[in-house]
Image 1 (cartoon, rainbow, N blue to C red):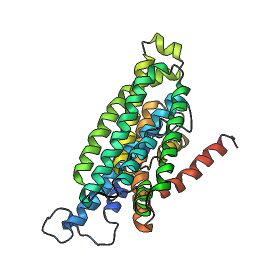
Image 2 (spheres, helix red, strand yellow):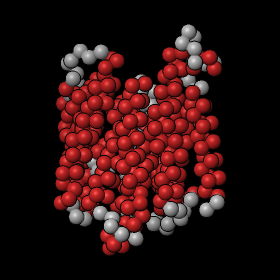
Image 3 (cartoon, helix red, strand yellow):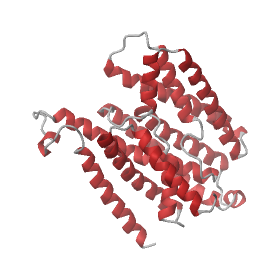
Image 4 (cartoon, one colour):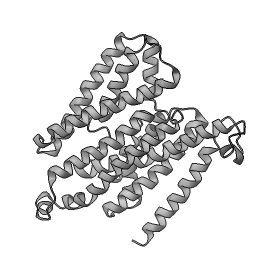
Length: 323
């Protein structure tokens, strides 16, 4: 138990180092004054890099937290931020916007904002539907089935749209699905921060009931834990955390399945509070490192997260002798 603070401090130090390395990765060589003096030639580039590093920090907090909540609640090791269908519906609304705005003249500086708004709108719509029908899903597995059906339907509609749209719109949508870590501005970072903070508040309120719920529903009810309230908190928290990242950075949520498993591998057994903290700090470190790799290799960040995630999940399965 005493080694846990040491582990967390070590990861935080590594995350800080990765954060500053991320600030110095790019085509232009920046000096210390470029980040603080608006009169320097590279001040705008420095601003882009700060936004990039902050976006990865926020994503590193939000995505693993969402995956951690869903895996603990559903007791499903494959549960991730997209299990509720939030990501799929967000992608569907983005596809609607990109495909049906192809003949509209929209300034480039508004394009990303409209894409983000479309994604957030889709997430809100599905979250409201989930909250509306959550009381009818007495069995937790029904929520997973519902999310799977919604994801399948959204994917089918997107495929139908892709079949008929022109090549440029299709290319724009595919580029969005790759994920982006360098197109966020300060206003978007501020909105992303607010949405994630609200999601973290609901997460904080969910941890203690999750601890009781892990001991059995009868035990949880004896301690006054309301299953419907816990379900709503999980839906709101995971939806806000995953939807906000999807809206501004694209669907890079595969890491939400991987990081919770990785945390259990390096520190298990542990209290849920410890696991949540470990998920956040390790998530920040991993996302900052991925951002560095993305800038050096010019590969989309979604591809990098997938290449990292698959070996980790396979290692986890082999360790448990599932395969």
